[in-house]
Image 1 (tube, rainbow, N blue to C red):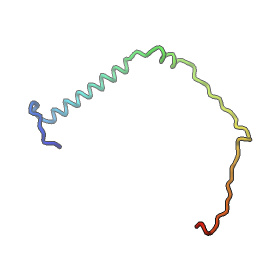
Image 2 (image 1 turned 135 degrees about the vertical axis):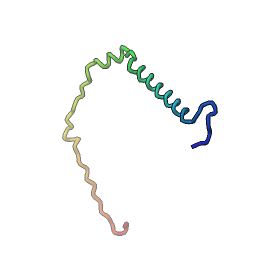
Image 3 (image 1 turned 45 degrees about the vertical axis):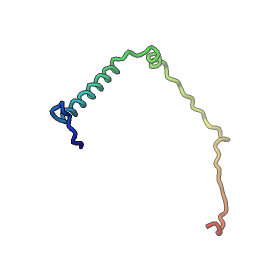
Image 4 (image 1 turned 120 degrees about the horizontal axis):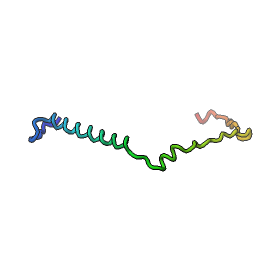
Length: 78
């Protein structure tokens, strides 16, 4: 840790405590702002809309193919 001391404040721990309190207050205010935010009409309409249905299709037998690759291996390529 650095040996620097803030001359106006009595100790470095008070600086750390002040910064911690400021950051905590900032996040508390931001959280309250998010919770009390008025939602737009477009978001409310999207939330109330009926969900999109997905279709499931059967794959035709012609599309279900197995590819088998066969080859000989010569002893010279080892």
